[in-house]
Structure formats: structure tokens, C-alpha cells
View 1 (cartoon, rainbow, N blue to C red):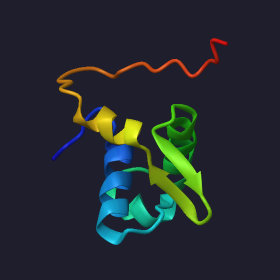
View 2: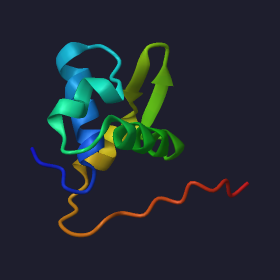
View 3: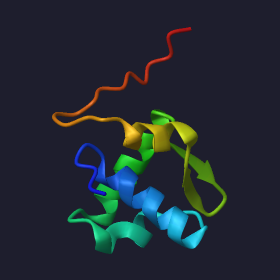
View 4: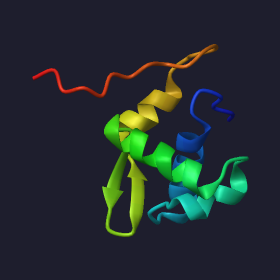
Length: 86
């Protein structure tokens, strides 16, 4: 399934699910038309949005990240506010 709104998250989830191992930017660089540095930046943003979680050897998708990919979104990006409201 193609996830146009978040291909990095989709690739991270696919890698994690297929290997049952933490995912790193290097692990999915060949699957995307982005540099390892760009993917690493996106991973940090996804952590800030609680769509990925940091683990010892990389990252794992969160339940929220998986649910985000399941949203029926057909166009445009979804904006997630990462500022603490408390």
C-alpha cells in the first residue's frame, strides 16, 4: 500500500514488520528517493510527533504511527502540532 502523505513512516513500518528489528535511516535509504540524512531528519520529526519511538538500536513504529498510516487521507499533508500544550 502506498502512503503518499508519509512514505518514510510507511517504509519504517514495513521494514520493522518484515524484520521484527528496529529500523534505522540507513536500513530504508535504498527504498526511498531520499538521502540518509533527509531520512534521519524525518525520523526525528516522526519521534517528535510520537509516530516513531527511539529504541536501543534504532526506531520502532508506535501504535499512533500505525493508526496514522491507516487514515483515509487522499490529498495534502496532515499537520501535527508538536508543541506541548501543558
